[in-house]
Image (cartoon, rainbow over all chains, first blue to last red; front, side, top):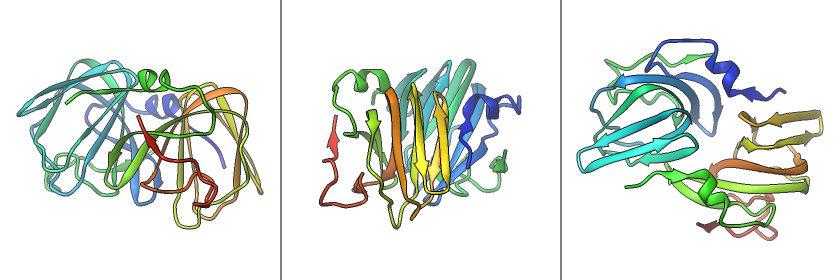
Length: 116
Length: 116
C-alpha cells in the first residue's frame, strides 16, 4: 500500500508518445506520457479520451477547432471525434482510458501499454 | 470546446468534503474537492476509488494501514476496502468515480454531485 508519485514515474522514461500505465481502476488504465511534436490524426470510436496536463502545454487539434491545454487543465475528447495532439515543447500528461484502448485508435499501430 | 482549468473550478467553492463534478468521460465523473479534517469510514462495494492530490497532502486511513498522499501523487482504494481520508491541513483533490457513486458509500448520506 503505497502512493504513486507522478514525477517519479515520469523520471523512468524519456521517449515521446508512449503512454506508461501506472495504475488501474474500474477497468481503466491510468497512464503518464511525455509528448513533443505532432501525433497523428485519429479517433476512438467507442471511448472518450481524458487528458490532464501535468507540465507544459499542448494543443488538441480537432476538425472543428483547437483546444489549448495548459498545466492543470483537462479536456475530454468525445468518442468518435478526430483529434491530433500537438506539443511545441515537451509536455507531460496524465491519460485515462479503458484498459487496452489503442492510443492511435488502431491496434495495428498503437504503442504497447507498458506498466511501470 | 474549451479546456477545464482545475484552479478556476476550485476557486468557485469553499466547503469541504463536497465533490464537484467538472467533466464526464466513459460513464465516469471527474470531480474536484477540498478536504480538511477527517471524513468517515466507508467503502464502495463495487467501485475502486481514484485519488489524485492537487495541493497539500492527505492520509488515506485503512484497516490494514495508512497511505500518505502528497501533491502529485495518486492512490486507488480497491472496491470493498474500508477507508477514511484525513487531511490535517486543507488539501485539494481530483477524484474519479463511475457517475453517481455515493461519496460515503451510502446514497442516504452522500453529498449531492453538483456540477460546476
